[in-house]
Image (tube, rainbow, N blue to C red):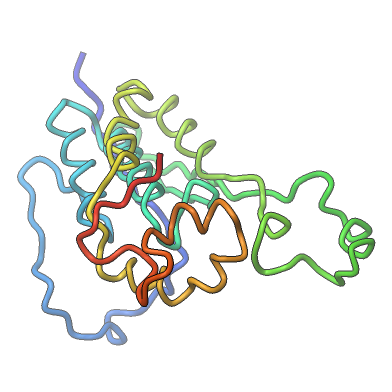
Length: 210
């Protein structure tokens, strides 16, 4: 049976711009003969490329890239949200996956008022929603992928055991270190050089999360 090739687009919260509004860029146009794996993170794209080389389809690769980028320190994380558009060229249909997080059942207005808060805080456990990304990844993989969850998560698991910290993420951790210090486990994981002038991971430092 001919393997179905699917096209997938992961939607982020970045603002959309018209062609006229787009700034000039020095980034090259990327071409692919059979497939292209693109994310904002080179290591994430590498995860997608590895899945393509193993025979996975576009959804398999997208799930691997999503898992890899969610494992890195950035705006996207396993506790975050995911939206995806999947185009199946055989059926000529586009399917939307809405993996937005929802508020916990107990996160009522009364709950926050009892704690002296008129609304949920911007940071910390009381600000969290039920993570949408894991469910979205599982749904995409189960309904449109061809590989196992173990295969898809392999690159992310390898990254959790250690990957070179990017210069942008290093700066973001350092910039937010006072906020990170408020949370015991976050401080332990992200401030790898506590007591030094630069307390977060340095660019190129192997960052370990397990």
